[in-house]
Length: 261
Image 1 (tube, rainbow, N blue to C red):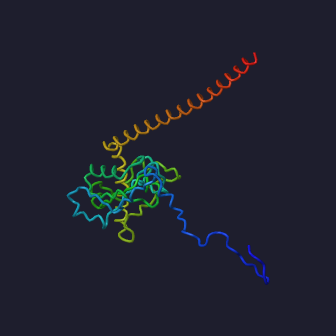
Image 2 (image 1 turned 120 degrees about the horizontal axis):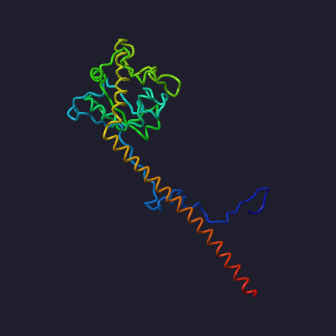
Image 3 (image 1 turned 90 degrees about the horizontal axis):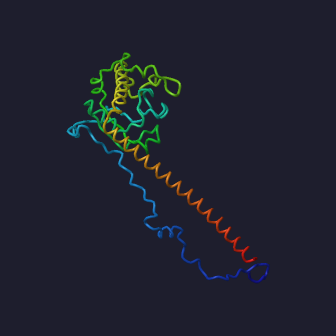
C-alpha cells in the first residue's frame, strides 16, 4: 500500500510492470507422446452407395421410389419402439445390411446398399450396426407374390406376440403409398413385410453370416480367456505379496528373540 493523503489512498505497485505474455492453457497438450494421443477415425461418408448387380450401377435409379430396409426391421433383439417391423418369432438376432444384401442376391432382387446410414429411431444401431438397403418394392412384390390377403403373414408371425403385448404384424407399414390408391398401398405394405420375413428366414443359412458368427464366437472366447488369466495373475500377486510380508514379520520376531538370549 502507499501513503494516506487528503483522504485518498495511493497504491504502489511492488511487482514487475506489465502482465507479461499470456499463458496458453493448451500448451501442455503439445508434449503428449504420439502413442498416448487419442486419434478419432474420420467420419465415413453416409452417401456411399453400392449397387447390386454391379452392371446396374449407372442404370438403377435408387433415389426415386425405392423403399428402405434397415437391419433393425428384422432384428429380434430390438423392440417395436426401436423400429422392429415383424414379430420376434420371425426375426433374426443382429442382422447386418450385408446379410440383407446377400439374402436379396439369392432372391435375384436388384438393390442398393448404403453401409454408413443410420436409423434415427435406433441410435445404438447407428454406431454398432449401421447401414440400410434400398429396394424397388414393385419388383420385389412380383417375385414374392404378396397381396392384400392373409398371405403376407407367416404362420409363426401371425400367432406370436411381441414383448410389448401386441402382435408386431398389427403395426401399420408407413412405407406404403399414402394418399393414393388404397389397394396399391395395401399391396406394397404387405409385400414389404413379406419380404422382410423372407429375408429373415434366409439370413441364418447364409455362409457369410455363419463364418462371421463363428469368428465372433472365437474372438469372445479368446477375450474371456485373457480376462480369466489376468484376474488369476492379480489374485496370485496379492496373495504372494501378503505371504512375503508375513514371512518378513516372522523372521524379524525371531531375530529379536535370539538377541535377547
